Length: 244
Ligand code: PL3
Ligand code: FE2
Ligand code: FE2
Image (cartoon, rainbow, N blue to C red; front, side, top):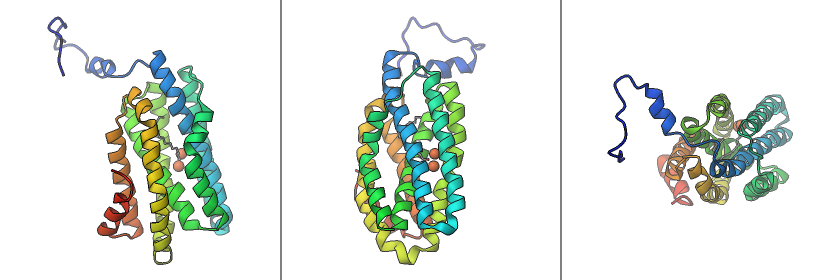
């Protein structure tokens, strides 16, 4: 980092918050708001589809429908929270862009649902999407406006419950679903990579770096696969199948 020679030196009494504040983006700039319209649309749509997905998984696991309904209702709250974040910045979310962003993953989820493939549905929603959202929210929190930071901190706590739900079910059925999970990983992990690429430029405008997103996502995803029962070698092989 270079400091211009003319910059006034921050005296010993300068509050540390000034330094933090100066490193935050300009939330009112046109460039920030333009990028935010797409990112905000993505998280609103993602939370909405997550709600639908947990309800749908409940139709495959009727004995778990009540718990899944609780998760679905949390997703609805998350969606409203992020809608408020957009309003607070006077940004209109680009919902058409967001629906398209999720189309390939949504199609794969719908196909698995139609075939009654619980493990694939859980891998897509409760592991991949949740690990993606946890990584994104983590990286976003330090560079968010104060209102969105509070909202996102509340949301990310719930997302851990969601990924945990998926892990517990898949772990309990690991032997029967191992092959299916490997196939589902192969078909869906590349879509996450494409989604990360598609959001890279807008995320950078929000001061979120793609490398950090990828790193945080992979750590969470690999940890989840390990908890479910895959060996380190299997996890490396599964990860190598798409993220470069
Ligand atoms: C389910 O609980 C969550 C589904 C949402 C997935 C969204 C992933 C977001 C990736 C884009 C980066 C967003 C930064 C966060 C801004 C609020
Ligand atoms: Fe959520
Ligand atoms: Fe979630």
